[in-house]
Image (cartoon, rainbow, N blue to C red; front, side, top):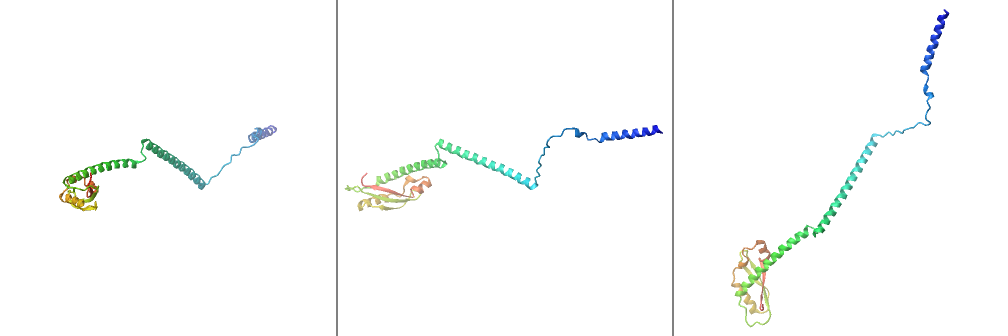
Length: 203
């Protein structure tokens, strides 16, 4: 009986010992750090996140726009430099040069035709004799594209009736001015639809 009691007590004591070992917190024997590091956590709401995203997007677009403006300025600068190197301020100056060349050619052609007309009329003009003074008469002539003389009239008298009448008689003997036949219609309308001839007493 006594032995059974002792065995029972030993069993209880052993179980209590095991329980004590299992429940002891051994962490008390581990040295703790002096301070615990606290990491702050920022809670950002969804509207705030959208605002940040939009700001970043706007900043990116602004930078791209600024970059494009800089590139465009550089291109314009390069174009201007190249224009100066070529000696042309613009395409207008080139067009003007071409137009001046055309006008020069047209003017020369008109002068040649008028000279031929004047020469032909002078060949049939009976200039009055005994006129020693230096006088001249200017007559305006209107033509059809066919070269036909439609009309003529004095626009500047010489002051000498005999001299003026002689120029009208010369023109009355001509019906057509063949020197304008076949001429470009645009040139004709501009230069020979109505033009002036000068008759001089002294060449």
